[in-house]
Image 1 (cartoon, rainbow, N blue to C red):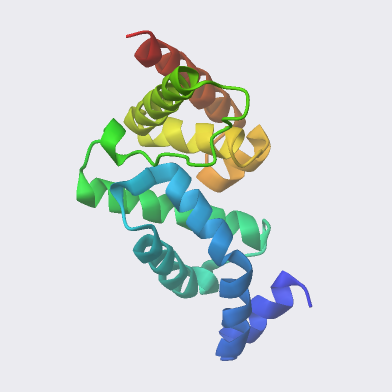
Image 2 (image 1 turned 90 degrees about the vertical axis):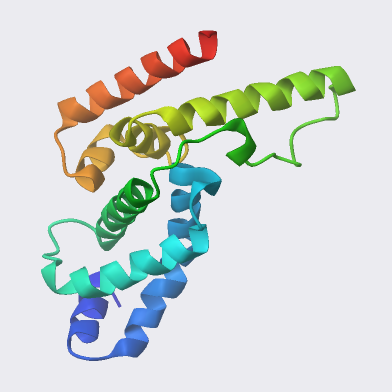
Length: 177
């Protein structure tokens, strides 16, 4: 069964089909939410909100794009709204520490330096403007093409190119400080 059939059945009242979508995309949405906001927001709560928003938005889905792109767009919009409400700034304390960090070939000092570098990078990404952070996260961590990012963000290809360029430039500036 393809996405169009599933959406049509949901719109016809088959709520069990909606559970299929939630199961299929829940982890993807949670991962993207975390990458966009880190610990600044309750990822589980925002993920639930994404699926509430998706359910109410399904009647507006016109099958011009893939359902996954529609879900990514709703996720990005929901995270941005939640971040705006929270108005928090990211600090290194809010960044997740990665216990799975490679340590086999690194001595303790090198591991500490590596951890500090990762924390500084996460902090810098968190301080980017929402659009820049979103474009960079989708490109770098989700392996989206510029065209896919433009579709998800609802903007032009040239704007995506500009956002990613500016995000990289701003990161470089922040990390030099």
